[in-house]
Length: 269
Image 1 (cartoon, rainbow, N blue to C red):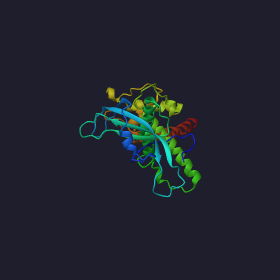
Image 2: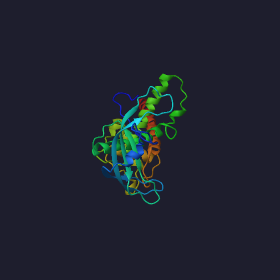
Image 3: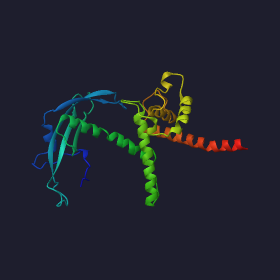
Image 4: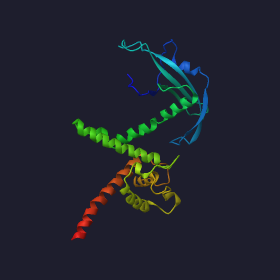
């Protein structure tokens, strides 16, 4: 059962029977286009950055209860809203974008339909967060702590760190919109070390200079990306590179903190 005050938004991977005997995909295919929009597709391996032309269709539907299995206590049907988004101008040889979304969000207008599509597009950020948590990042799956309390504390702390990595990834370009402040992911005492790292990492060319203002999270993201091995020339630093840089910064921070009492002891001699 769906928890109260929680909405469902999933992509339909398989066709489903409707309560009236028709099929979900055929019903959606028969709808006229109800709106159009453009979507920028970022460059990736084997694909250049391009603009995709999209059409949107939406409707309400009653999904029929599956006939097979022990589901006698399930309702006869479940009410959902259906959003169909498809690309109209795919380049030759490339499969077009086609998303069939099922949701409990209210969809009464084109504006609400596109807003829900924007929510679905956030799935990539969620996938990247879990990628950072798992093997490609903190490797939380290899934790072998059996006691629930310490294990849960470790997982929670790791999740907080993974969220900070995502904050850095999202801040790396400095926009759109107002710049996020450094305090979103760093402490005030981190500023001097970040600036020292920045001065050490900047090169002679414009592309090797940090383009973001002091006090912004974007500036810190640039520092962490460079500490993680990004040269500033090719591509954009992803979560794995940003994680490596953030860990390097934390190591530098610990080293600085360890040195400070030692210097004080020396001065007291």
